[in-house]
Image (cartoon, rainbow over all chains, first blue to last red; front, side, top):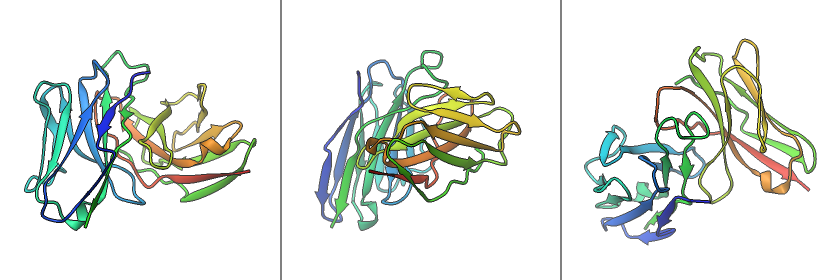
Length: 118
Length: 111
């Protein structure tokens, strides 16, 4: 069964350094999401893409975070500079085009990247 | 999206049914109830969803009250692998939108 791929799985960095996370959604999935999950809380949306276009980045801290999906397939999330409060799990999810999902709107999540900022 | 309320944690004996409640008293007529779960150190996984009729699939059953103000997710024969955080999410059927997660219910299945 196809899965959402993310790398790296774990990242340790020092504050003020730059970090980048990569996501490869399931083939054919036009919608891609980046969520951040702080320990003990549910995931929260950072940015949503429809193909290569940003649909919602209202919760993305744009002074330090950036996201791109240049060819509408894989995506990169970058943090520069990293801060202590950025320590969290970063989850990528994707959805197939409307009408083709086996449910109304099922999102498929990757395993996440756990970031620790020291 | 309507707000949901879930118990923080629940225990269940292995092999018994796990019944996870969710309150969504402000749900609107066009909003669906979705359930996802997140096993430790993994991404969330879709379980089931429904509008007003009860639903069943290979993973679970979803019972929605007639007034739609609450629902119950039922895992008929819980196993140790069902230990996870279960999220109840209410959202309208308006295309591809992000999920709004609460804190969920941490279900511990006991041997």
